[in-house]
Amino acid sequence: MTPSLSTRVQRIKPSPTLSLTVRVNQLKAQGHDIINLGVGEPDFDTPNYIKTAGIKAIESGATKYTAVDGISSLKEAVIHKFKRENKLTYEPKQILISSGSKQALYNLAQALLDEGDEVIIPAPYWVSYPDIIFLAGGVPVFIPTTLEQHFKITPEQLEKAITPKTKLLILNSPNNPTGMIYTHKELEGLAQVLLKHPHIFIASDDMYEHIQWSGSPFSNIVNACPALYERSMVFNGVSKTYAMTGWRIGYCAGPQYLIHAMSNVQAQSTSNANSMAQLAAVTALNGPQDFVAEMQRTYHKRHTRVFQALQAIPGVKCLPSMGSFYIFPDFSDFLGKIPGIDHDLELADYLLMEAKVALIPGSAFGAPGCLRLSFVVEMNILDEAMTRIRHALSKFSL
Image 1 (cartoon, rainbow, N blue to C red):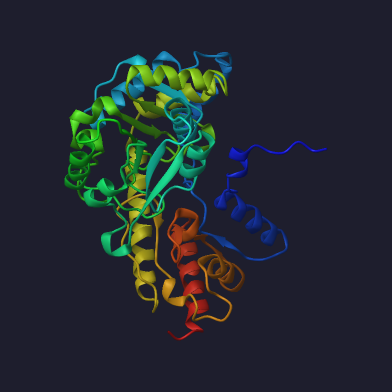
Image 2 (image 1 turned 180 degrees about the vertical axis):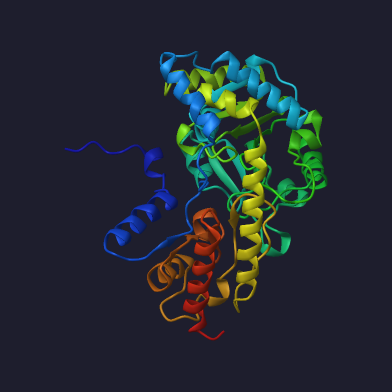
């Protein structure tokens, strides 16, 4: 008799991005010319000076276990980064280095949540948030948003979603998948609600901090309301900022007692993050930052081109992104009006097979009717993708 799987693991949904990648690779192997705009990683290579630091780490023998919570030099680099760029002050015992920011968020859920605790997640949301909560026994509570409100929750919505069981709020800005950014003033409004509910902890996911063109300095909720410092965990990493996705280094900062608990969780799961990658991350954080600005400019140019192309397609509603390397157009006008296409999953499949362009359905992010498009390919490829999408949709008059 085969043992039954746990209830918590049966709640987990397959990653839509990984599932799409498998299908795209299968189609390419069959000879199809597929443009994949579903991936969520930079197309830039890791800068050479960072790669050199990783090579030197290997050659110098830095290939052993490290402290579970990270090497001291990387912790110091993270502390300096927070002070330099975010005006936030932390001590080494308030820093945890993990195998990517995803593991850090997982550690938080395991350390903070008990069975039945509620976690407020604004929608659209990064696909991993709900499953991380499920695995900790928590209950995701989604706050839906609309294109008209720029996919951002209001203080009134937040207040309404809070119950005595609410334990955590997750805020992601710049947002994956929408590219929207909460302004300093908007964060202040949310903070006023949170100050009235001292039992709620806040997770600020700042992964796309440096990929933004909002015209205003980046701000997270701790910047907007320093009174929430002791109730907030700030998450970040080197994956998006330095094109280091495969190096798997994330970091977070927060209250010492919670960092200690999260470190204990990590000690019994993966232990320390990759030792060589940690040393490369030191160089990334402390070294020249010109690459970051260059990459940001490139993404901004690509975004402008894609946004203009989407605006020119009848039936597509689209907001300009403020950051990240995603844009999140609304294709709901096409649903039910194209034969056999009543759901964004079916629309994404149609565009994959008809236009040979891969996009992620918005329902995977809690926003049915939208599709996520990543502009992490060269401009000429983006232009070709937009031409294909426009042609595939032009067959249907709305």
